[in-house]
Amino acid sequence: MTSLSAPALAVARTGTAQDAEARAFASRVEDRTIKVGIVGLGYTGLPLALGFADAGFHVVGVDIDPVKVESVNRSESYLPDLTDIELQDVADRLTAVPDPSALHDADVVMICVPTPVTPEQTADLAYVSTAVDSVLPYLRAGSLVVLQSTVPAGTTAEIGRKITARTGLIPGEDLYLAMAPERVDPANTNGWTLLNTPKLVGGVGAESTRRAQLFLEQVCRTVVPVSSPDVAELSKVYENTFRLINIALSLELSDLCHKLGLPVREVIDAAATKPFGFLAHYPGPGVGGECIPVDPLFLSERARREGLTLGLVETAHRRISERPGQVVRRVGELLAARGQELKGARVLIVGVSYKAGVSDLRNAPALDIVRGLRAQGAEISYFDPMVPGFEVDGLPVATATWGREQLASQDCVVLVTPHGRLTAEPAWSAAPLVLDTRGELAPAANVEVL
Ligand SMILES: NC(=O)c1ccc[n+]([C@@H]2O[C@H](COP(=O)([O-])OP(=O)(O)OC[C@H]3O[C@@H](n4cnc5c(N)ncnc54)[C@H](O)[C@@H]3O)[C@@H](O)[C@H]2O)c1
Image (cartoon, rainbow, N blue to C red; front, side, top):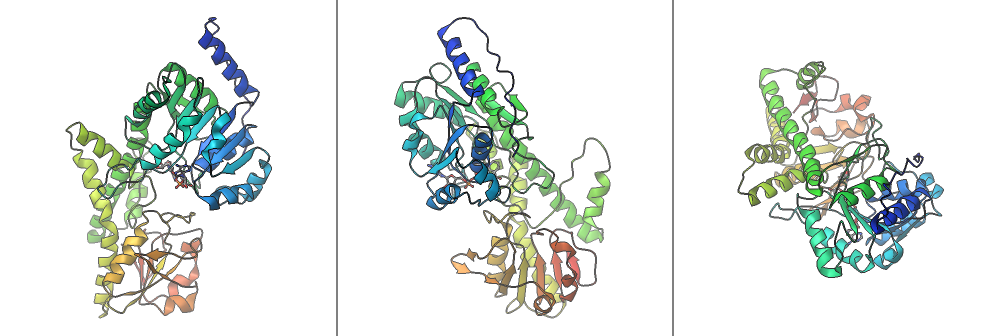
């Protein structure tokens, strides 16, 4: 990771105590004596910790997962985009610990913990709340706290009220609090990284925004200030809702193309030749990960609290949630057309992580596909070079190797997640029947597109 040179750290000199303190903060950012604490060393926290360490800061990362703590301290990466060498290069500036007391001398604390949904499909802010509680004892006048986790609008302001209630410190006056939502796209193949992806920041009060912007500019080339944490929170959730709705639309187009016998990807690629006003989204087996299936629920939840129903968002969410079931039905129909039943059929799932290039199975459509096929009595195995093993409902899914013999022995092979150059493999031709849930395989007599 390339570090940025320190930008001009201009601070207005009006002579007040706060200005003197602001100047001291700026010069400590510039000379790298600011101590950085990162709470949560997962997909978003570890790249950030590495980024600041690479930029010359001393960083303490806190994580409740001892495996991650040990891996970081051994300079062993567990993320697709970070190498062991990158961690080795900053080993003298990046330490991981399980105990938040290591934050006692941190000047800046960034919170990067998960924000899943509850079974009732509302935001589960328990990790954020616990992380904030763990940081509270170490906050002091002048501390800067930056929330990176994706949250419903109003959460940062709520954290500010908690900080004041517990410590007496007022955000924007005594200490500084901002929201800077993470936009990282693990395994992005178009070169978008922490460094070049513009970062939004909205603080509680102008000084919180300014300090957080200054600090984040040390690792992000472009930091875009917005007028409040609520704007930053809502923008992040809106970004992913935009994707959800467009993916849902592409699923509807795909269903229509199926009826018309037209290639959906060609239709979308043709539309995408328009140089303005169109952004291509492609159909697939559903969506996974912690963002697209989750963040729109934060938007709907927030709207409901205001007495609004976001019908479009809710319909899109439902449409996408049904897609794995549609994959299962299609396998059944294709087998039935060949006089076979799903019960007892040998079905190989190719690629199970939620997207290509990662090993992450969170909310992966493959989980529901396996569940649905199993419920119909199919015998499931999977091949995924990035996932050595996984379970669905406590039952392990059998692993399979890749090769012509393996594919030839199946009743149906389902392409769910196309890692690397998997779609170019010649072995696909050996399978008696392939269901391509993404329309990425070359057309062939044995290949059906979902
Ligand atoms: N993964 C992505 O692609 C992505 C992209 C943009 C935004 N986000 C958002 O970023 C946030 C974090 O996501 P992530 O993917 O990094 O999650 P993650 O699960 O990969 O990492 C979170 C880490 O926080 C740790 N943790 C949980 N509670 C803790 C606590 N109290 N103290 C210390 N550590 C704690 C966990 O052990 C875990 O290692 C979420 O809000 C997510 O929606 C994720």
